Image (cartoon, rainbow, N blue to C red; front, side, top):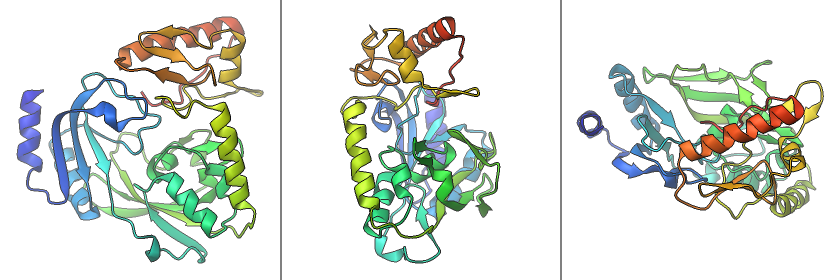
Length: 305
């Protein structure tokens, strides 16, 4: 790992508008905060990213982009270079009254929802309360019980491993429940911008957002370290909610290795500090096996491991 760190320092030290950190505590980059150490690079401009990705690709350096880190878990010793996009954003530069408007992929979804509410944009209540950046929300097709972010999308702009910028138009079939194929798996593209369609006005959108946020606050452990929902809801003809089934098994409050199934919402695991990915995986496998034995259903992870 020391040799790899030295290689990174040599390869990336001359790229302006970046900040490379070696052997840092990566737990600060995820909302669950599992113990993890590795290398990261913050990228502040599109031009810097265009220079960075070809170097990583040509030197076969594996990397992963992390946005808000809400549904991502990292290993105790991370061998991938973690890329954190931190593009500047000026709200005054965006005209929200047009038929479409673009926002940087590094922008927090909560900020985008807040701006949409100020301009009374219709349907943005569907993605309120999701702790993600816009890029991360697109990749996972983030959503709530009221809708998904894909319903608002027109296109995304990406940088590929050759440093080439290109626009990808949203097409039918690209998105499914908590999943998308807008980025080709394993090809290393990074979303830099998201274009949204303006679907109209709604004078009540702020009230809808505030009501949902209050409901979410009362039903989910937002004040704890979690990765969001652990399991996807099962959709094998009849929707089966993972949290409900874990609750039926009486597993709320079950604890192991500084991890506990939330008493507030059984599809959340709370971290009290000091646990690692291995500890989480042991609990994850145990709960998944219990669900399968009790109900004959195999729930898939929503969290990215």
